[in-house]
Image 1: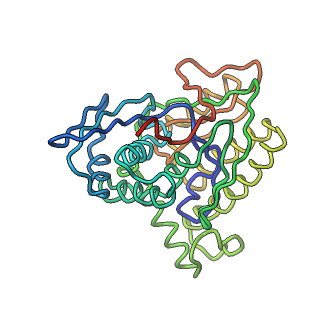
Image 2: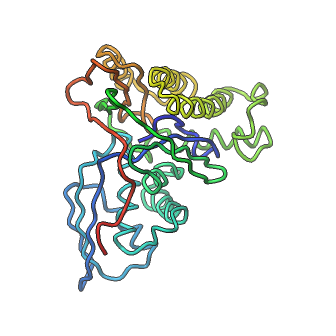
Length: 305
């Protein structure tokens, strides 16, 4: 789950994700032919892609878990990482493993994602968020003590598919903004946005301001200032809605429902165009019925070999 830093990862930006106490478990054993048994559908391109990338021989896979798809919780990245680890990928090489999984999402599922979800899975740790610098690929743990506060994901009811949404179009717009500015990435473009035509100026402004919100979010967590974190969630949502234009009416209704229930802050979560809403609830308030409570959990790991 990503607290702050949405659509910054593929722009060499900053992100503030955390691994959560939900996930996907993959069991692998040798077999005379490759077979897959899964509790849900939609796994085919991801599993086929990881098998091809790793050059795996015949194997029997069993896939189970409690991570909902389409809620912006990185279910496709979690699946790719889990399959790769079950097939023997080296967990000591997280960046290479993340890149392998991103290739699978792009080449086999048609979604040109960044590395945020994969690295969040691999670098997440109990009771911490992670400040990710996607230019240097450095990770810094940031303590996340919620106390009586609660994080929750609310389903907007609008299904989201990265490959079918405007996600890839936003990536193209950011690349075009970089070309016009003569910079390698929007990380380098903080003071040069006025010359851009719309909507490229708005896209670039969101990215640069969202990087700033990540830094403010890190400071808020270190100070235990969760009220400030809620304000940053609200500011991030306004930017995703108005500048990056990745919200939809169902998401807006869900954000409003979270605020009506007393959320200290709420924002669209994930790539946008549907999916989930992340909300922060203070002491004495509770998420609406049907919300999924989330909290920092361990990152991807081997249960046994």
